[in-house]
Image: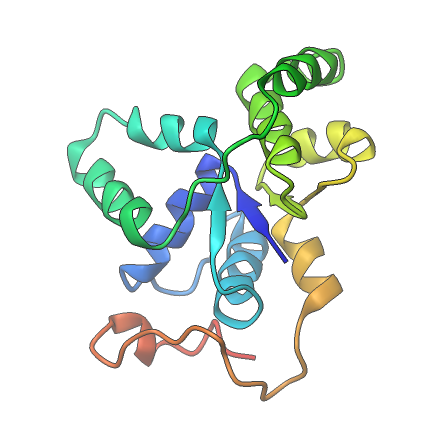
Length: 173
């Protein structure tokens, strides 16, 4: 299964790898589901060119550097196969959602044949999920609910013992 991320999801996964404590903010459920999905369900997350551009445009160099390092080895770019389709879908999606960058990320994900695009943006998901075929636009919690492994399952991806995240238990099932 080819699962893509929007820019906010990319940033959270990178932060989590830095050994972040258990999320407790308003997005805690989504953040836990996203990270657990990476640990247990998918070998890699894909990123559209527009999502990568958003991450590369970060003004904070200290945040930007880890993104560039992850892009070089863990988050491959899902290149669209049809630029005209991307333009047409972006324009069509903009009738339902005002975030043009979100619309473009979804259009690129569809053209790149991603199976799923994950986003923390509930409005984006509610407004465009009905139109995002064949790619499924979902919140990470919905993806996790639909695919999570049984309790005690072995992870596909495990933090290295030297990573502070290895000592955390919040991401385990």
